[in-house]
Structures are given as C-alpha cells and as structure tokens.
Amino acid sequence: MSDLFYRSLRFVGRHPFWLSSRPVVLNAQVTRRPGAYILASNHQSPYDIPLLMRHCHRLIDFVSIVEVFRNPFVGWLYGSMNAFPLDRSRPDSPTVRIVLDRLRRGRVVGMFPEGGFRNGNDSVLVSRRIRPGIGRVAKFAGVEIIPCVILNSSIYSRISSWLPFRRTRYGIHFGAPIAPTGEPEEIEERLIDAMVELHRVLSEQLAAQIAKP
Image (cartoon, rainbow, N blue to C red; front, side):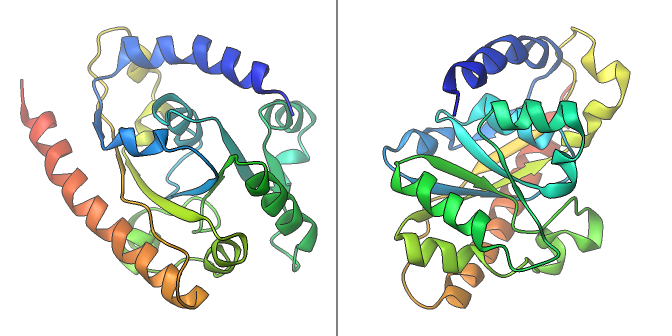
C-alpha cells in the first residue's frame, strides 16, 4: 500500500475542484474519528471517488469492481491509491479477506453498497435497495459504518464545470456512525434509513444554495 501516492494525488486534485466549485458539505468532521470504519456512499458517477477523497479527512481504501482493474492504467492508478477489486459475478471471499485485513489495520474502507452507478429510481435514495453484504462485513469486523450521500457529482462530466469560477454546485453529507449491532439485515436497513434522511436534508440545502444568485 502507498499512502504517499494517495496524499499526493489528493493534494494536486483538490485545487481544480476548489477553483471550480462551491459545494454544500455537511458533517465532514465525523470522518476524523480514529480507528477503522466503513464509509458507505451512494454512487452516481466516477467523480464520487475524488469528491470523497477531497472531503473525507481520513485516507480511504476503496472497494472497486473487477472490471475497472482490467484497464491497465486505471487498474494501476486505483491500486496505487490502495483500492482493490471485487468480482460481483461470484462469492468473493478473497475480497472479504482484504476488507477485513484493512479494517484490522485500523484503516477506512470505502464501499458503494448499491454495487455500481445508480441514479433516479434505481438509486438507494429512492428504491431503498442495496446489495447485501456490507452489514455482514461490519458485524464480523466489529466496526461502525459511516453513511454518506453525494448529489450532483455527475455535473463534472461537463467541460464547463471545470472552469475556475466556483459556480459548480454539488453536495456531500456524512451521517452519524451506525453501530454493528443486530443482524446484518438490520444493520443494512439502518444504513438505508440513514442515507434516505441524509438525502432529504442535503437536497434541501443544496437547492437553497443553487437558488442563490
């Protein structure tokens, strides 16, 4: 693992986002907490990852899909940032072992429990559906889950959004930690409830900011 590469990339990458955006960021201080935890976010676009890197105070070891790692450059880039692949086509005990090992080391593991990009009615924020598994991992490792919701990250797919006028609006809201108590299904239900509520609050505040001149 190379934390130096991660820190260097975050340092360089934060400047374009700072120059181009005026985001709504809520409760980011919760990510400062020491020790291991799972950061669980919705997933709207590829830009969710750099935005999480920008606003989470801890370094994140992301769980990505194995298809991404088949691209040599992207696989090298993600691997250099301590990310590792998950093969969704089969029960993936090697990935689970890696997750548990990272958590035992006291690291933060970033997971997208929807299992891929989800927008509109397919998003957990509307459908209340996630892939099972994150509750089992949290319970087995005995670590808390910090829920997170990101809105409007896909705006960075437009070239104009990168212009240095600080006009690009997106939102990110970190929630209170969810204890790994109860059955895995109960933990996942609490995670869904938390994400839906984070979305409600963030939507209101982001809309209010966008409405400002």
